[in-house]
Image (cartoon, rainbow, N blue to C red):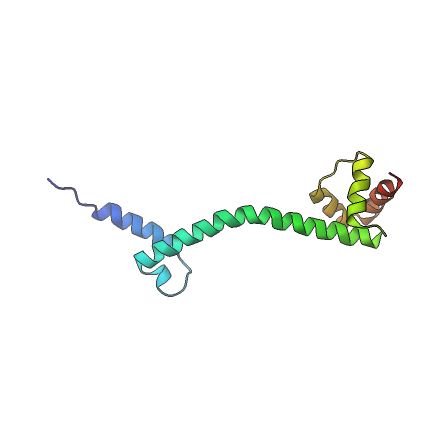
Length: 115
């Protein structure tokens, strides 16, 4: 007796069409187009999860630089000063301080300049 894959294939197709919901034209309605679209989407999502990490780091560095410039020191001299003063605060925390607590950031700048 031969086994037919009707139910299994139907479930698989429904799953793919659900993943491509909201896409334009035949990309959300025709299985073959939707499957291609889904593969690309998942690939982009994977790659961009990694890309986001460098994007965030770039944003933090920009914010730290702006705050450091406002306090009359360049970004590179500020980071070097922190290293010499053996203050280990990552860029995420520094950027948060620069935005939310400018007075605390100014104290860090003074410490970095002293070192």
